Length: 185
Length: 79
Image (cartoon, rainbow over all chains, first blue to last red; front, side):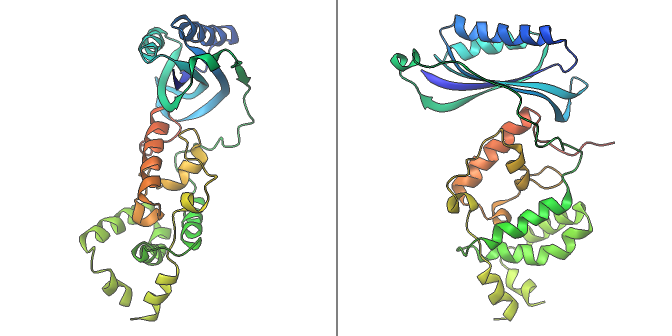
């Protein structure tokens, strides 16, 4: 059997019992089709990166389970029907579990970990972004010299605005091979 | 060859996922993925991020998955 991971986002304004109902219905659907739940991860309410059904926040629950391939369809159908679920996504984890091993698997319930990152604000903090940039190239030499230049040239412009970053990008594309010249300047 | 050019050669980078095998690219790890998108939400190209082809591909898939479950933005929100 294959291992899948289904993330569901439950409407944030629901009462606890309704949330639990949504979760147990999903679980029931998985188990009904011969699936075996490995892990249920309750992330709790998080801010969404964009609005879904007019909601800014959503209650994330992630199911990890082993299931025969055709079960996913049935589960997703069920999720689509449930109104309390505003978004879902199933991912094939590309792992195979032998059916005989399934018996030993116990369902693990993970509670909301303290949300380390509630910042889903409209823009990612600039310093953070570019701080990363500098770290990435610093690690070790490689065969891609071109990329470094990009950062070197790019740095002053980047600081101005997000806009200029994009312009820079386009420029780069135009004069791909002419990088050296730019460097001379 | 200008000095600045030589310097840039020294600063060549290697894919950070190749150098540290412990980092797993996971679509749920929005904190990690955020380092690889611009402030406008676009995926940072390989020539800038320095990822190798394999990891850039994994990264791209992970970002796209994260977008569908609203962990990452498709674009910035217009006001």
